[in-house]
Length: 450
Image (cartoon, rainbow, N blue to C red):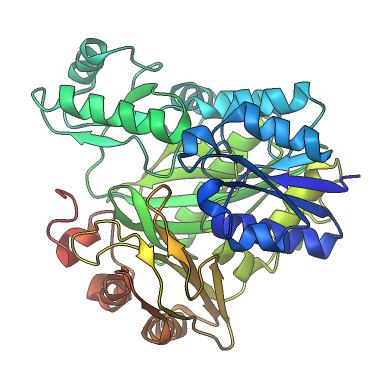
């Protein structure tokens, strides 16, 4: 049994884990940096401990500090949330060495999937369609250029040790590669503690489809449907929905089947997400696997009535899944919008103090946030303030509900992307369900060049 959990994260995901633990009767311990001393997750956890100064590298990414906190507080397990150390296999290994349950997949599966190049090779061997790319992380600019020439421009540089759009750059020509490589590596190092980069063929105007997976330690693996995540800014997702409006039933079944095939090939347990790119002809290609809970997991929870965080914890404790694939049914349509502290056109971060804060409410509305009136948005971490999730009978009604929610969400004192989100849900292509990863180019012409 797991009786106490240290939450190695901050913000809304830390609060989300606390919600689940309270319902399960599990004691929670929050960690926080000096910048988060007054944060909500610190106040709502049963206990809290400071692990360092504001920079993430000295606090939330500081493995010795996190492990020391866990040992001092005497917890049974650590939940990493998403981002920070969530996909760091070394951190998971240290947890195991210290007899702490890491709430995530088996270490071998995590290691395999944490390196995007190795993951791609394993999925190719399992029979999944895979995008052409480097066989492993490239060591330097020279190696990256040589690999890119073999693949053919344009190419995509990607952080091997993480996801979420961090450490990614599109390179259109040889001349642009050195600077892009340096920027991608620096960003990956800052976000994940590893600057390893690999190179992949760049697919123009794809749809981004991901499949939510859930497995236990007894060999049972199920999918919880797919999510459409194609509305992105610099590979950071802004809007997600399920089911995808752009997939035909037979495409959806093929992607579900391949996601399960890939997960079974590595004997996956815990919550995870298999990500695919879909081209204009409907062909899908394995992109990567995220071995953690995703930011957008609430839309899958809405249509399935599952609590994925609780499921993660139960699976980590060794319990079997209490349902099979045949028991899962997906009902209605759910959409999530990410509300960020940034200018709606320039997308520049907007730190500062919130002077007024009112979240939308009503049937079929969920808002995950750690912000509040008088909350100070620091410049040290991700700019996401809240996630607005709506769920109802069909996509048309879900769009109407989301429009109403965005109109009634009040945040004053800082800039937010609420006006941009409103424009997205009104965009003819989005309304029709006919959009791809470049939709923001039409709404915000400088979105890809900024």
